Each structure stands twice: as C-alpha cells, then as structure tokens.
Image (cartoon, rainbow, N blue to C red):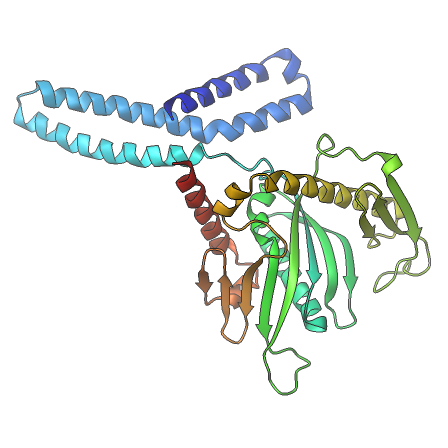
Amino acid sequence: MHEKLLAVVGESDRLASLMSTQEVASDPEAYRRHAQAHAALADTVDTFRRWQQERGALAEAEQILREESDEELREMAEEEEERLRGSLSALEQELRLLLLPTDPNDSKNTIVEIRAGTGGDEAALFAADLFRMYVRYAEKRGWRLDIMNSNETQLGGYKEICFQISGDHVYSLLKWEAGVHRVQRVPDTETQGRVHTSAVTVAVLPEADAVEVDLDANDLQIDVYRSSGPGGQSVNTTDSAVRITHKPTGVVVTCQDEKSQHKNKAKALKVLAARLLDIKQQEEASARSSERRSQVGSGDRSERIRTYNFPQNRLTDHRIKLTLHSLDRAMEGELQDLFDALVAADREARLAQAM
C-alpha cells in the first residue's frame, strides 16, 4: 500500500507541475483536465501526509518510552502512543478506501430514462412519481434537470420519460437507481381498495464525451415527423420531432419535446451517444462479471432493486437489505440516507474483495 501511496503523491506533484507550465496554463481544456485529475487525488494525498505526520509523532513517543526515566513524561508518552495508534489505524482504513479503483463515470452528468413496465396506467403513474422524486432530489442538490423526451398518458403518467441531470458528481449517486422499481399501492382507479403491484424500469447513463463515442454520420438514419401527445402550439403542426437510428446497433432514439427540430436532433444525438457508451461499458463489464457480483448490484436493468410499499409507508432496497419506514419522505426527494447506505455497502464489498 505504501508504494501505491507514494505513486499517487508523485502523480499529484507531476500534475501540479504541468498546470504551472505555459503550455497547459494557456490551454483552458487541457488545464481543466489536469485540474480535475489533480483534485481527484487531493484527498488521498492529504490523508497520506497526515498518516506520515502521525507516524513520525508515534516514533517520537516510542523513543521517549525507551529512553526517558521521568514517570510523568513516560505517562504522557504512553497516552500519546495510545492515541496515535488509534489515529493511525483509522487513517490506514481511510487510505485503503481511497485507493480503491474509482468509477471513471462518477463525475459525469447523467441521462436517466424511466419506462413504465407491468401494470398499465398505474405503472405509468408511478413512472411520473419517480420522475418527480428525482426532480425534488436534484433541486435539493442544486443540480439542473432538462427533459430530453417524454411520452405522457391521458391520466398524467409517463409511458417513458428521458431527462438529463447536470451538476457535481451526479452519476456517482444516481447510478444506484438503475434497475426495476416495484410499487405496491391502491391505484386511484381501484374501487375495491385492493393493492396492485406494478413495475417501472430505470436506466442511468453517464453522458458520453466526444472522445468516448464517435458518431459517424454514415451510420445514422435521421427521420423527422410531426410531434404527438400533449404539447404546445407546434405539436401536430410541424415536422419538429426527430428519430435517429444507429444502423450498426439498431439503437433508436426519438425526441419531440422541443419546438425546434434542431434542438430535438441535438438532444437525440446526446441520448444516442450515452446509450452507445452504455452498451460499450456493459460489454466491458461482462468480462469482469465476478467483480461486478461482489459489488452492490450489477446495474442490470432487469434486476429488481427496490420496492415501494405505500400502504405500509415502506421502502426496501433489496441489494443491501435495507428497509426504511419513510417512503413519504423519499418520494419528496429525501434520498440521501439511502444513497449514503448504498455507497457505504459498495465500498465495504470492494474493500473486502481487495484485501
């Protein structure tokens, strides 16, 4: 571990030196990349330096205990030695966590797709409820949310809705939402008070950089058509909706929420790039299936990750066997305790695998 930490310090120093050169300082994009990489190492470097200081202090305390005969000084040194050993143990555990491989997508903006599954209108209504839950959480975090595409039902639900969330480390938290969300409640349309079970699928896609996904125009079939469903004046009157088919993979993306065809096309291309990056990363991850099984959930969209039981005000995350009797607050966007528990469980699983 010590050699890895020295390598991290060396890389941090190298990046700091590069950022001070005229070549990097005069290139905003290069400077941004180097600054992000440097910032990502800051916690590890600071913790390692604290560990080095405490290690030096412990050596001094041990020297006093070996050489000093004054009882008062020895008692003070013994107390200091005990404190320092506890501090060093905690710092070493923190360093093990900091040295765990990080998800390169964690700092990215995110595209979320919610689709109603089994349950008909009730599933579509719950899709809308989930969307509002994420809107409220994004507001609490100070993130920006932009709807990319939606297919609304007559009852105010969504057959599907796609939106982008931008902000600080969005993917690092929202990635836990990928999978099947099951709801148990009495629908508004139920006259006999029976509890129905419905399901909604959530996909969470990191936003793709241009260097990660190269969209060749020859691989794209772009169709325009008239928008349908609820909307503004241009709905059903202009060919503003856009459908893009990626011919090599068959992936199809539609966007119709904007009145401008150009804006719909730009949004559709962004979603397409994110989906293609997701396919690429899922293929790479399948080669590391044993590693993925050791972590919290696989990210598989067919995996049932959570149940929302409204009659009991209960939310259960099946991956970490966590049950909270505060579903009402969760639906208002109070999700941080849940996300913190998921992050902690994932770290423990990966740390156990690394040891």
